[in-house]
Amino acid sequence: MKKGLILSGIQPSGILTLGNYLGALRNWVDIQEEYECMYFIADLHAITVPQDPKELRENTKKALMQYLACGLDPSKNVIFVQSHVHEHAELAWVLDCNTYMGELSRMTQFKDKSQKQVNVRVGLFNYPVLMAADILLYQADFVPVGEDQRQHLEITRDIARRYNSTYGKQVFTIPEAFISETGAKIMSLKDPEKKMSKSDPNPLAFISLLDDRDTIIKKFKKATTDSMNEVRFSDEQLGVKNLINIYSSITGKTPLEVEREFEGIGYGKFKMAVGETVADALEPIQKKYYELEAPENEEYIKNILKQGAEIASGKARETLKEVYETTGFYSK
Ligand code: TRP
Image (cartoon, rainbow, N blue to C red):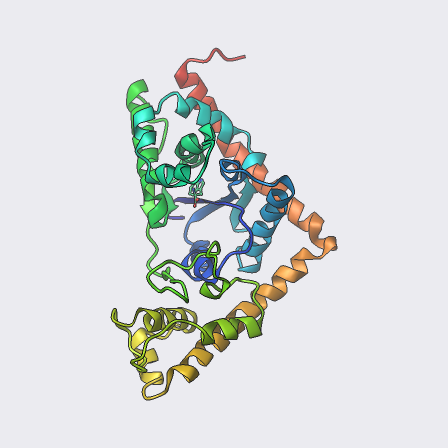
């Protein structure tokens, strides 16, 4: 018996970082045996801000190849593209009609993102409703969310409860946040107070999953530390703490063990060791990724998405049917 359904969406935005890998992707591989898992590439969400069509298409494929390269097994997880299952957009409309302008206006991500745009799109405003549709469509029990998506999960729960109580029926499962015990929070190599992000203007601040060995080592050599020259897991040394976190989450050693291993050894050697360890860990992922990129594997990739969309559609159809009936649509 599996412990429930986990669902998560990921925006297709190019190559992921070491932070995404250690903080999320790697854990997905660990939980695939225990839970029923569904992952989709959120291309409908991506167009809430302007997108270049060619890039969007490529990034969607790249996202999938990265998941596979990181070890996500398509025979154990349902992996699909959001726009391949038309029920997402359909349920989103029904939920739009059960969501208040006021509650969407309070979303902090909308406030942040809309400030950076001249013509703010309606889709950006409705973004959380589409996300609610994604989650409720599959009756997900758990959604792995970072801090930035917590408020969107809260509104999903509100929308689901409201719909259920308006119609006096348990149409939707109320989803819960999935907090993983193992996911490490990896910070920027240049400013350890900030999360590692691929959109950081300084490329030295993050490690891309596809950075080559020399680049990785160079970036670790230039990582921000301090002048204490002591490998200690402490909040007074956030840069060093971050490097210890990275090293320990790959090697499985505890921070205390890492402190001991590098006792009396300068930062230069410590950084080198972290760089080497990261490069070693990423090597097999990169090898798999480049294999998948070969034109003869296009068919294999398309097939995974086709199968994923088929399974997802089956579940989505059931929920949407019930929603349409409950809402009062006259059936054919
Ligand atoms: N909004 C999420 C993000 O940017 C992506 C996402 C879309 C998602 N739909 C989802 C995550 C449903 C979890 C569940 O990270």
